[in-house]
Image (cartoon, helix red, strand yellow):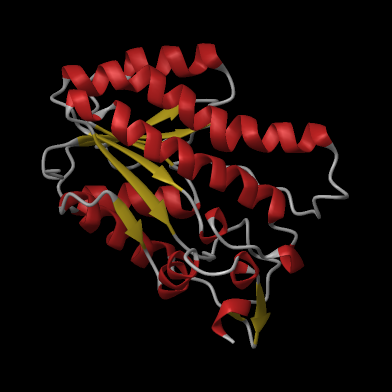
Length: 245
C-alpha cells in the first residue's frame, strides 16, 4: 500500500500508539490523517483532521464514514482496558470491553468497506496484542485478551471477505507499550514511535500480519505447542512464557 499521498483514518488517534501512528503516516507522506477521539483536540498540523468518533455508537460511526469518504487506509486502534480476573469481573464490564475492542472494530469495517472499495480497495488495519494468543493472568489482562483474540478471528475472516474488493487487511500484534494504559505496570515497554514506524513500514510493504516485537513472535510460535505454554509471567520486568522452559 502506497503511503505517500494516502488519506488515513486512525481511531484513538490522539494519544498513545494512535498518536504515534498519525505521526508515522505523516512521516511516510500521507496527505491527510483523520485522528479520532471522543473529545478531539485541535492540531497544529493542517494535515491532521481531528474528528469526534465513538466506535460504540453506530450513528457516530456511520456519520464519520460519510465525512471521511476520501479515506483509503483505516486503522482500528481505539481500545478499552479493564484489569481483572475472569472469575471476578462483572459481565457488564466485559460487554463494555467487547463493545469497544471488537464490535467497534466491526462497525468501522462495515461502514468503511464501501469507502475503501470506491477508493481502489485500500487497507484496513486492526491493532491487536500479544494477548490475542497468550495468557497473562497475573496482570489481570485476561478480559482484554479475550477481546483481542476475538478481534484476531474477525480480522482473519475480514481478510477473506474483503479480498474480492482488493482491500488489504492487516493484523497487528504487539506487546506492552509505554502509554497511559500501562503506567502502573513496572515492566519493559515498547516505545510507541518505534512500534508505529514498524507498523507503517509493514503496511507499505503489503504485509497481512505484523508482529512488532520479539515477544509477539515467540507467542505466535508457541501456538503450535501445548496451550499451557502460552501462559506468561514477568521476570525482571520482561515476559517469560511457560513454553520457553
